[in-house]
Structure formats: structure tokens, C-alpha cells
Image (cartoon, one colour):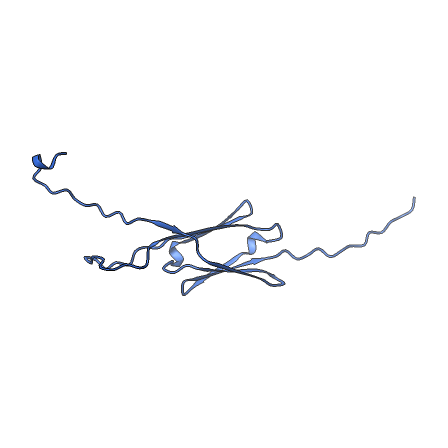
Length: 127
């Protein structure tokens, strides 16, 4: 529309840009399994999704902007966005026993290994 023929000023629609970040990850191995730590600042338990499908672990953490109502930004150094990361799991991880805990913006995921099969001696009979 041409503004000259419209008495209304155009409305700005606030669509904050959504960034997707790759969270930094630390992975440790123990005798029992793998322990994964992910930094997810601003992510709450309610906005965190963890999925395992086809040996692929995916984590998605959604972050909502923390802007007071009626405020306008004067200076901004921290970009708001979602966190996304995927991993291919080895076949020795027991998917049904994966545990996750989120505390102080750090996600801890325990990926238990299946117990190793003990060698079994097979009796050979004659004839």
C-alpha cells in the first residue's frame, strides 16, 4: 500500500531473529558408559528435548528471550537462540537406560554400555 493514501503508520512486527547454536560438549568414558556434558545457558527442563532414534541422539534446547515487558534494547552482546546437537551412538549403548539431568544450565547425559558378554566354553561331543 502507498502510505500517502493510508492514514495509519505501518506497524513494526517484532520477529526476533532465531539463531541455532551448537552447544559445547565434553564427553568422558567410564567402565559403565559415557558421560556427556553440554552447556545450555537459558534452557529449562520444559524447553529441552532429547530423542534417540536409529542410534542417533539429538538434543534441542529452546531459549526464550529475557526482555522485560515494555523495555527496548540499548546494548546487546548475548544473542538468543536455540541449541541443537546430534550424535551417532555406538551399538553398545543401552538406549532404554540413558539418563539425563539439567542443573544450572549444564546438561549431563549418562549413556550406559551393555555389559560385555563373557566367553562361553562350548562342550564338543563325539559322534
